[in-house]
Length: 406
Ligand SMILES: [Zn+2]
Image (cartoon, rainbow, N blue to C red; front, top):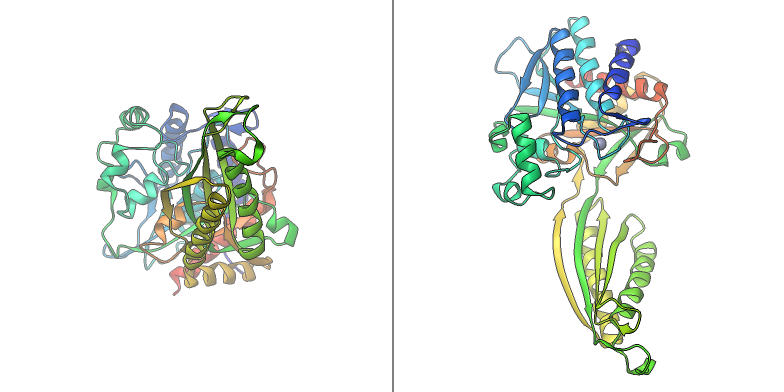
């Protein structure tokens, strides 16, 4: 009979946390905002009330710790994030933090002997209001001074948030190499695949890598009435043809990948001027690095062909990239064994969204599971059945206990 979490205790915590920064049926808790810090103050109280050791590191990450007998033991981390996107949902991140806390309380109640320290962690700014994956990347030593100097949320917002939270040197949160035994995360799926498959648990095989480019087609501004169609060097036409062709290329040749054009801007930008410049924000994702590289080459090749055919210049500026993060086989096996013990149906899934697990995967065996959710995500209407939340928390607990027995 596998050990199980206390669903009523988890539910009480879940409802209490959802009330902090509540906005309609969702929550508004951007990283290091007053609402987020209130949630963290509440979390600290819950950690202390459980008789766990509380820790706040230099990046503001909040943890509850259940110590192993040996001070030299490594740490098995469980967790997620309590920050939300602006006007986000109650489940994204919060469920993973509270399930981690509940797993520690359950292990504590059962007086299990611990070969590793167990730590339930709430990572700072997973959603990237200031710097994406700030807390988890600080902890793994991947955060750089350059990112802090040019945060995507703006320097003023970063400074204000750090001041509110008392963060002075987030780089100081880096843990010694080898101190982590592993990381396990529970999260809602934020997509329809588990429900479509009729599965209880998605065991993440990899988190996608992301490439992004600013592509600009350059032509010639001209009178939109007097210039014959054949004589135009229409940058807008190049952009439009490329958008259509790129989508066809991905669905035909890269079925495991996705592509998005999130912005298109024409210049000069008037009804009666043929566009001289058309700029596109291109993003594409794949779970496999070689495929991500091949897709990048194919997309740029297609863009060059379109530009040549339309007599346009092409400018392609890489806007950064995130490498795919495969989940550790031992983490996947631990989740699968735990789900089997509970009689839950599980399937492998690729995560199309970024998560703290991808940061941890660089330094220790890391893995994550999804539970079925509806209503999309990053909106107040995201939803997961309570039974699914309890299932996920039990699988997280089971995988952690399996880890202790290794
Ligand atoms: Zn999340």
